[in-house]
Length: 199
Image (tube, rainbow, N blue to C red; front, side):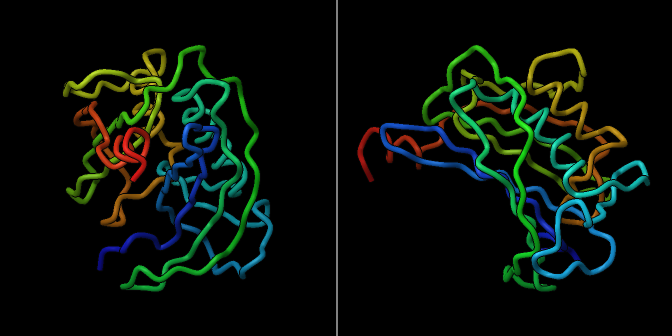
């Protein structure tokens, strides 16, 4: 049975957007070993990685954040993350843990207001997995093949990480991503209305 999402989910809160003040979320489903109780420290929670190894929650979160951070300039930051456990077969979730990220330096570019970046991947079970990032330094309205490259642009670096043995992010069909598909850039209408129409 596919998760809806889950079974566990890491939620990053991205802040620093102004006029009006707003925040965005990045949610990554993952597999946690055992059954940690609410309030467990991130250092005491073990997360499964794509390559078969495991690491503590704080380690995998900070590694992922080191790639995610590059999508935004220095004025945009992550106020922290939370780990949630989903109730099987529902969208109900229970709080498990919270922590802060170690923040590397961002990019020198500026955020593109009301812009959306969608990066898609194929999972090992055949599903489609999407990374959706809002108001990053990306610009434009194009769709091209997503080519993983650890030395490439921010989208390519994220794709390289997602397809690496260190990735902990699961698709909704309980499988890890195995192929990068597309990079789609465009406008997010909901944010555009909030910024320019105030609704």
